[in-house]
Picture 1: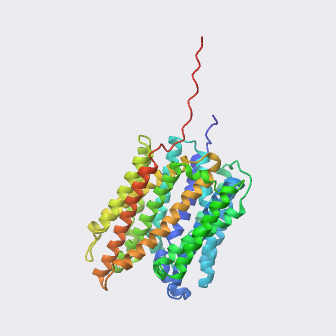
Picture 2 (picture 1 turned 30 degrees about the vertical axis):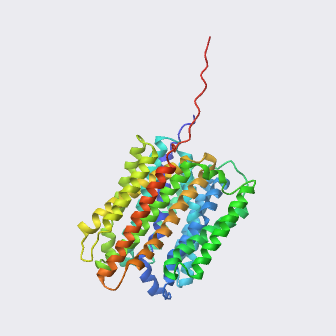
Picture 3 (picture 1 turned 180 degrees about the vertical axis):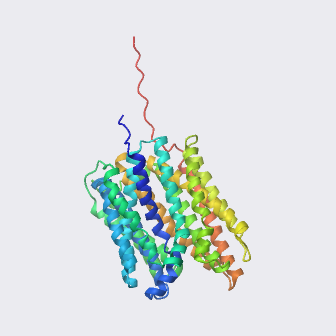
Length: 470
């Protein structure tokens, strides 16, 4: 067996920094949207595109980015994506019109689609399958969970103290060291395929982008509006075309055999459910704390610090549990804890406080998120061969981003449906409805994980035949 790369833990630290930056930027603008709208003169509802544009670029190209990492080289793809992310972040921070900012956010999402799957596939290529890889993925998942929730912790104070442009300039001191140290610490690796599938790339990008658009705009424009229905129709037709193309391609972008793995499918179901629940809940909590309890963005950021901290603790607890148990009970328990946190938050009151109303639910939600992220990633990556590590990473990251978009949409719809008047009490009923919907999604994910992950997540290796010596 080959000796482990002595640089592997330093490489992991570098890749985790990239993961943190990519996940952070998907939500960090949430609390800065009012300031951006005022400064750049967005029309009503237009500033939401600062968030949506990133999700469209990121989610739409993740599968292509993952396969590009396998074919062109994972380190090369990662460094190219990081360079583009640095340029796009500077463009976001310097934008003087709304159109320029939205365009730069799309470019930033495209760069993230190259960075995220290539980084995770480098982790799987650097660490051999087993306890050490599980430990590495636990660190990766903990950082991802921290980044997904730290957006609320960081975005508010930065916007309050330095202005909204600071949330984009924050990426510069992270991206520059990545570009300097990446060639020194990261080993190059690639898959076995050597051909691209342009037709598959176009159709899957169109399908995912249209689905993200429909989910993102549905709450605002209405789920039965022509734009929303049209987006989902385009997604369905492009998805069907993609499946037809892949079944006949000699070098498919996403071989359909990939989805026969129960571990890969189940792991991505866990990731999808966890992301949907936490993003929807975070969206509702941010509005409840500010609109009902009167928190400033700075105070809200401090109040939610428990969420990312417990996410890190949950990821390490899951890593320890996977050393003793199969992935299924760990994944089911993690999603059940997330559901419990959402249900606790579903009891908030208009005259509630932090210690009783928010703290217990946020703690449970964060711990469950960290554990679910690790369990979902371990299952999904163990269900793919080493030659498809970039693709499997792209699918897993796409599940997280799609879950995030769907979670915000589901929470928005629930808030509108359950808010039956004006005033703090009516608003609180809407937020409680959003928390209950997130709890139901987490429980549904636990049931799906219990079914799909019934088989061991690890690939089995046949035992050598016994030879009898006479």
